[in-house]
Length: 391
Ligand SMILES: *Cc1c(COP(=O)(O)O)cnc(C)c1O
Image (cartoon, rainbow, N blue to C red; front, side):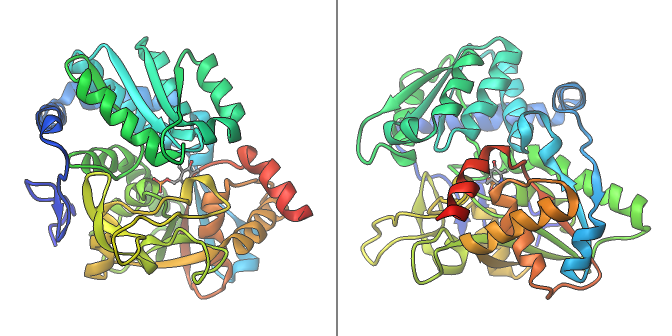
């Protein structure tokens, strides 16, 4: 394995990744790849990004020793507090970096697609900072379900376009965003929200999120004098996990554990693409996908909006195949229980997505020091939790 775990020139992570898109998008992806390589090699891009992460996002986020939660888990649990980043989750690390790149490329406009709205809000936030117009495609069904995030995006100056086609959810919004990009590729950058999509997106997003792992590794050293025994993160598309894991790839003693959504159980509706998926192409890349025998994409389910995606980033499919990381899953019910326990023991309401990682830790199978990626805060999930506990 290459030490950085970077993909090869064609953006392949082993047999996964690559670029499965219509010819019309090849040029845009080539241009993006070149701009990204150039920015990475340019110290001024790094300095500008660091300054933004510092002043806009509020980095570094703390590494927090969860003492009372540790007693429940039977291990020393440290939380990497991405919930304290601006807008309340790790997504802003990526959107700010991509919009900075777009501005350097001379793009005049950014677009994004969003399911539950969190990536849309993070993109709208970054676009507002740079003064770029922003269009967010969202399935009409999701617009109805996620009214508050629609209002947030609009207050941030973005235009939210409801997509009526198909099932009027995320995959239809992705198609619409791709159509817009093909038509307006000269002046538009498409901001993808996780380590998914065609090359070079999985690499760009993972690199922009690696700040999480790099900070966490240094902070763990400072706090404990050594490395954690295990690093745990929830996996939807896989961006917060990839960012955290990348800080520890070279540390062979550190076990990496990704936790997927088992939803109603692995034999019912769920979002566990690594645990239960098979190789296939989704959203322009080859990875592990929830699909039937004919390749029809399954409907993913999780109580947390950020984990109900029927695929996963190719980097994780590869980490699973090589054995460098291990993937577990937690059900809706287990995540709800972990949500409650972190609130009661630490005074922190986590987002339901990282509550899956906490649920795994609460099984008590881990020993020593466990570093958990707390990818976001739970304010957005309070209504969901309340109705689930009532029901
Ligand atoms: C979107 C989201 C996720 C899932 O996305 P990844 O790309 O897998 O990180 C996880 N946690 C929170 C808080 C999110 O908002």
